[in-house]
Image (cartoon, rainbow, N blue to C red; front, side, top):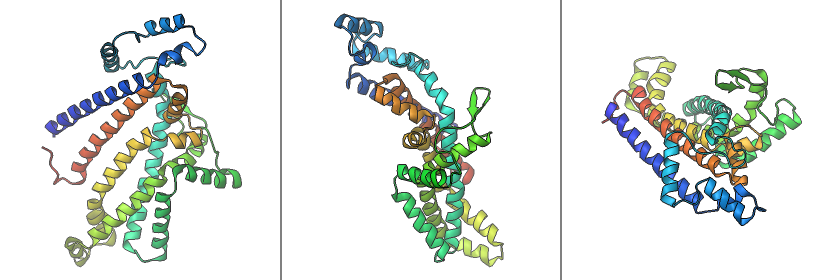
Length: 321
């Protein structure tokens, strides 16, 4: 296990270096940041001063070495717009995005696995057919349309839930959370449901397919023949073997939910990292964009390793080399 962990960490570091290289090349050769920093009315002399001040007059390999050195020390530079440290700006928004992604994953996992098991037990019933039709709808419909429909129904017509913002928050140490206030819980419900729509549909169909296959296995028939209770056969013997692919998809989805919740955060004006990224793209604020991409890659790699480790807990027969 230790050897496996070391290998995965080395692989992760290589991937992060490659991502940093791609980010550096992409933003150095797809536009001149001096135009953003100096402004469109700056004279040629003022632009040269800015170029020298930010080290943009140096050779490319020197700029890249300086960039890598800064990244290794957690220094991604300052925002071109606000002149605030880029990593601090991202981390300030991180709790909002993490809580939104966590709530969306919680909803999709509980409902997806639960409904998937129910549908697999009675696949031809009216309820099962309705759930499966709903899951197909969830996969097919775009996320932004789900968000708009939820806002129209729950906010405009019923006036039950707020349509934008994060609500009241409380500060606990370095973390600002909205999950401990009634206002925060009300505000997170609609964006979390929107973000969980696709993952919920996928988990329902994945759990149903896995359970249908597992319930036809000989050891399950033997368990039934021994007179075990339905709960023990389904939850202990059948569902446990189905959980490995389900956990894999859920784990990978969590990384994607954190990194790519841009559309949902924009619709609900959620003050998270995705909203900041979109604003930074419009303003060509390269340090913020690079920091976001690097942090997203780091989160996804970490979650992948954690998901692999969960395999061993779910199935002790799995061994790592």
